[in-house]
Length: 116
Image (cartoon, rainbow, N blue to C red; front, side, top):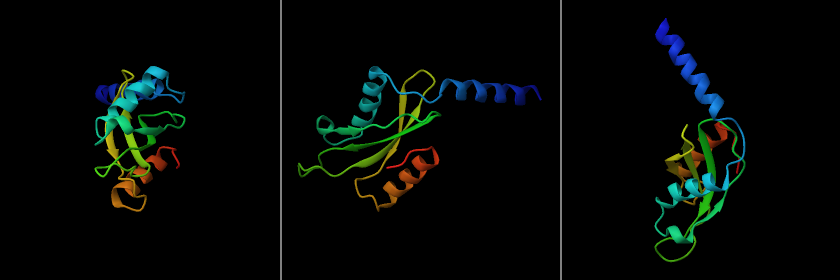
């Protein structure tokens, strides 16, 4: 029973930390850097960041150049919002909104309140 109370208290504390508010400029830079690490051409990244919906997940869009040097199209990405204020990369679509990776991440983002 004590363990259950500890788990509930931890969950309540974590969800209270991750309330809906816009990220600071510093947090946006950290978020973008976490996503850039996954890109072929990180310098070409163009982000579309919406309002943070609260909780432990954030979703946005990024467009970057592919191996042919052209922009691949907006790819949906998903990051875990850490209690420390940092971010952990979870996944990214591939710029094709009908592909399995893109639809899977878009669906997960929709479940967290993000629409594109």
